[in-house]
Length: 539
Image 1 (tube, rainbow, N blue to C red):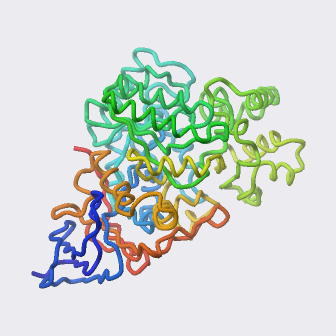
Image 2: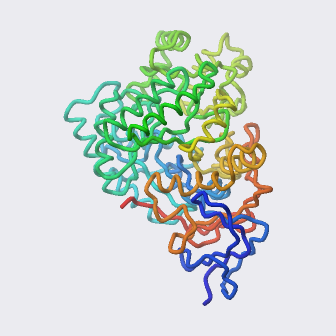
Image 3: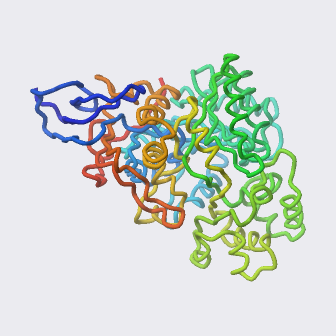
């Protein structure tokens, strides 16, 4: 018979960790029809994979592309690095649910984070309504959604820094129930960000219990990855144990020189938890720097009530002095980036306003000198006020030893911790973290081929079947007949990331073909706008 697509002469790595084998893969519609020595097969399109490796499309275990999908459906930087499915809605921040009474405020805050000239109209309240909006058109890759604890908290009780009342907690559990019934794959939390930073462990356990009832996972940006690392990992394990839910520790790292080497201890904690029957795993990106919003440098109390109140506090000299003192002295339990890693390791990555664009790609100590401010604090206040709290930052805080140790762990899988961008247009602005473009090629090129941290087959497992199984996306992540035809074809001798912190908008090399639901989306190294991706719902 004549298939729609035939991939011939490649070395097949099936995603299960097995050694490669020679084989052909036939695709009919959006499914794999046959695998093996298909000598007599014919097809409308034939790709000769001689000298290349054929693997399942990568499943990004940690993505923030959900805030882009309605305004940038192409997802180019995602697909160009071989990713065919993203697990989005991480770190507690999701586009739904939304309190109808706060919809205008939510829309304003979302649009403040989007590139200039790009606006999202928020018409939904429930999680199902949001997914229906996304389903109205195609996507560059498949998207599986988590529901964010931060979104649930904001919709259930507003942005205040306090514990929920019994009635508010019931409402939050109802919102989680609605999201899980709509098809969310689990609950995410971001415990360094408002409003998640205001939540106590008991609150998280109660809401995680709801996600557990529907077979979901608890995916957490823990409360601290620096000096509070060990305590924060223990909290995540406790939530998993008390809620009876699998735990995924997001972008696992030791993010402070004071805790370099502590990944030995965190991995032992995970090992011991698993021995007790608590299901804990981690994801990781292969860089020594993280990235988030510049306002995360401010102490927790400054965020109480939302962005408008934060900016009001920043405009008050007395409040600024209190912020200065708290950053200098620290607050117990708070991940104090500036105080822990130093201003020279904090780089501003994105600025919306033209006046301050010149500071993109520069560290805060350099920005302070160029502004001629008396100290870095005054430069920070000035920049945040001028840009209304919207700049992004990159934080250099990790050690290669910890990166490799975590990467080699059997409990690690790969994730970008990035949204979808591209090299031109509004989503090509700023200096985003190079993980947006290079996460998967970097693991394969630098850490597998050049440094031998793990076997190629094991790396592919951590990029495909492991995250697919972890989140319950059971019809993807393996090359098997009847599985969805998400396929990446790469050159193991050439695949490498090209994006750098100085020049991040660069696509990788060595990934000539990517197939999404049976459609060739990267063809001979060039992106094609076929939008074959789908919104996935957990069933």
